[in-house]
Image (cartoon, rainbow, N blue to C red; front, side, top):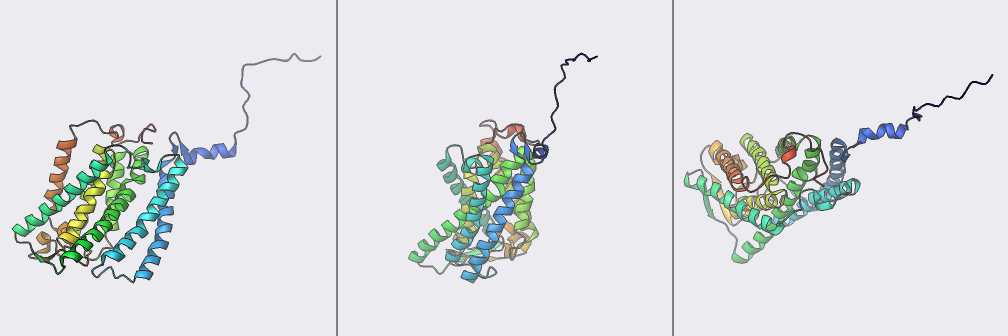
Amino acid sequence: MNEPHLQTDEAVVLPASPVRDLRWIFMGPNGLRAGWGILMFVVIWYALTVGSTVLAMRLLHVNMRAPVPPGPGILIELAQFVPMVVATWIMSLIERRPLLAYGYQGHPRTLRLLSGLVWGFIAISGLVLTMWRLGYLSLQRGSLNATSALEDAAAWGLVFLLAGFFEESLFRGYVQFTLTRGIGFWWGAVLFSLIFAFAHTTNPGESTVGLVSVVGAGIIFSLSLWYTGSLWWAVGFHATWDWGQSYFYGTPDSGMVAQGTLLQWHAQGPAFWSGGATGPEGSILIVPALLLFAGAMVLWWGRRGRSQFAGAAWRPMRSNKLS
């Protein structure tokens, strides 16, 4: 006798696809997982940078332990900046986001950049002149004539504008936005501020206080990103801070020395106060200066609205709002 056919409501379970099973390793609810994204970005950037930097150094024969002319300085910065842009562009294609999504969207861009340029020079001038008044450094006129002074001012301006875009984009661009959705904004900011400082350990003349100040600067720039939602202000501040040190006042910049400066600087007294071979960033006086900057930013920007990262301060961003 034939058994009657019984119908059930149970769904038929098909064998899982091996490819689909592995997809969760690489993809999360917001697309490519943060860790894989950062790994890919770093590998692409590093591979391109090693090739371009080695080529530039061989062509230019630059001794980084001696004063660096502005011409080679521009090429060295380009050798680092272009690979960073390419790496960010590749990741933007993979993640289907605009290239400017990682720190360069929003308004007003020009005003933010110009404001950063002004405040960066004011800040470094305040620190240098305070040290001068306290007797920890002396300043004298350099040997440049009017024509060469203007030419070098423009050339070094380009160098440090490239440096501002490169360093801010590398340490607080793609990686910061990716870590915000991976572990939270401030965990990412602290991590890459420490990495930012570690990258300065190879600078000739760098000191412990100098490295602490680099971490503090990283937090300051992250704070500007937190409040403004973009890197435009940080790029401007970073550029004129370095330009003011290296060209205008002729001081070392984290141990690096420029060739062709408007003024000449000489440290006086203990390096703990004068900065010594590190420059103003190596003086303990930069600590209260950084605290003053941070306090001013909180007071000025903190009352003007809610940060776009507020939902991911210390925890992962749960939506795709940053794209």
